[in-house]
Length: 334
Image 1 (cartoon, helix red, strand yellow):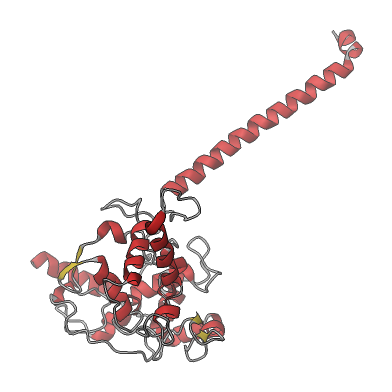
Image 2 (cartoon, helix red, strand yellow; image 1 turned 90 degrees about the vertical axis):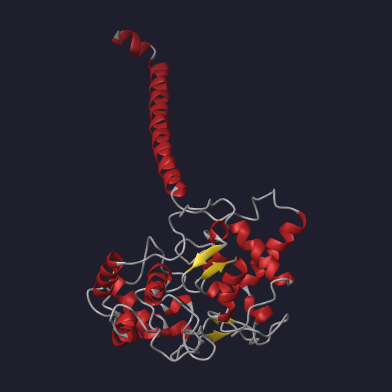
């Protein structure tokens, strides 16, 4: 046998090399399959925003509306800001300052669930709300302005865009990554003084020493939005609730550095930073019609009256565990 191998050694070498290469390809294929399955599993468990580049079914007027709607969400101030081309009805912030990547980013307060779940009864208003009411609230609270006309070209475009973003989400579904993550409570009250230290180190370079943000050179929009002051969101905005803002911060800030899988701040830093920013001066909104059933107020709604016996300061900064325990006890009695 060895004599046969020695006499045919070039062929033996070729066969050996072929066998090694084939084995490596098989192993590589198995690894790729495993990676592909893991990636698919990860993707399937999380919302993936549709893309205008790959959606060839969206055509004609509907496509034009969606494109314009995305533009309005991204650059709201150019159309509705103090120097807006349509109407000067907002504070100069953009919708995507709160809904990152025009409402497409996982854990970035995205729009994935909106279309599937509206009309929707909301305890804040005590009424059944339409998508228009939801968009209008953002204009009146986060943009500290006036809601656009529901019949306007602009509102229709924003509604078409929100509908398109959520077209693959069914009512009752809640894909991983939708909205804002609720991060664990602290075992103490959130501390604005500690948050100020985090702000100075991590946020001030973009948002300014006084939270004023950075205006673009033409003065028509903000490169970095104001976090407090007359041009920021008012005290009726969703991000004025500490649990919302802390979760938003944890997964997204510092901007273009942090992500859900790679946060830059600890939970403690996120809570304290949210407490600092939301303790600074900002516009006030008439909230007298909010939460007509005061027992439905969220644990971190910072304005009384309440049914649980805790103060406004405790509701704003925590600690929240005692408030939650009391709410559970009251719910049992009812």
